[in-house]
Length: 390
Image 1 (spheres, rainbow, N blue to C red):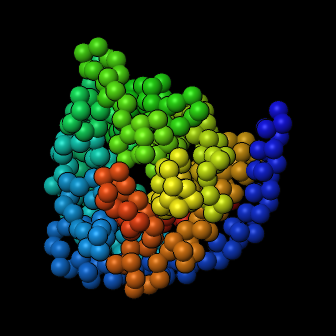
Image 2 (image 1 turned 135 degrees about the vertical axis):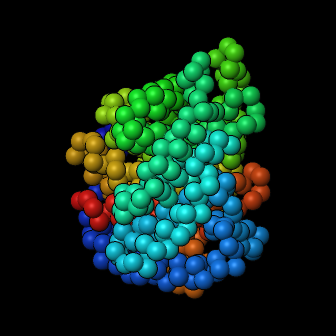
Image 3 (image 1 turned 180 degrees about the horizontal axis):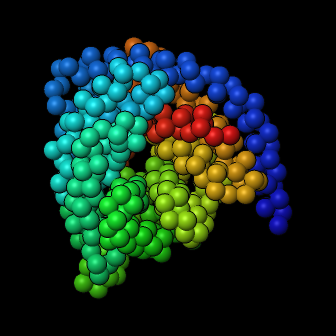
């Protein structure tokens, strides 16, 4: 009881402090989006040298543009759509349509589970904001392609084509495409698949302390878990930061689309685990792994913070007032930090990406302390969510 009381006091203090911070952040948002437009105009100019590709990162001081099949391909078009959503300027609608069109060829892609990232962030936002002819059909094709990776016996969508039958926590993010398809086509199978995947993930993917494993490898014959793997985290038993944010966001989204309270309860449990983690830095931007070996000198992951902030802002709309204030206070703190000069690049720098200090895959020694397109995407999404809610 003492610990609970202390936590609630901390939440109340954070919420009180955030009231002024939120007003400060709201005042900053026009300048942030103005700078983002400068950056992305520079990015579009830079991309003239990469026809047909999409920007991903800068790694080892080298700018990286990728093909449509890359799992991150949908984030830059999605960020362009967010600029259009904020500005309503045709400049960004034209650019968003151009870069979204670069993904049309993967509408039937079955190479991995990331079709949701690729198509829903791009075509999904485009359909929502501009109702572009043909976008709905691309999304329905993408959902059908994603469904081919579903194993009826396991009740899960296979993430990759290695291991035996790997399922990663990131896969929760791709379920929104299936839920959308079920609502827009009347095909209940897409929802059945999404719910089943979420249910089995809820049952198997989380440790008793509330953290999520990155990779579970299943035996498709027996249905048993054949192994637990660290993937992009420090160890198989540790809380890789971005993975925790994926889990929080994914179960929050599944509650929104189903109103199944089990998903809300899981999102709350993950939010509480992260918000109160003993190794969460004061500025709210996580280390790349919450148990990184070299803290406090470990790399931060701004992308994990941006995803978490966006998820907390949505989750705050589904819980009681005390928790809502806590979650919103945490998200505002994270966004204020991300909007500072420590994480947000000055116009003309950072190869025209918005955020600095992200980590892609530290164990495999790539994309360490770099810009990443998905960090920008969820940062802009979170800022827009601030403007849409109180």
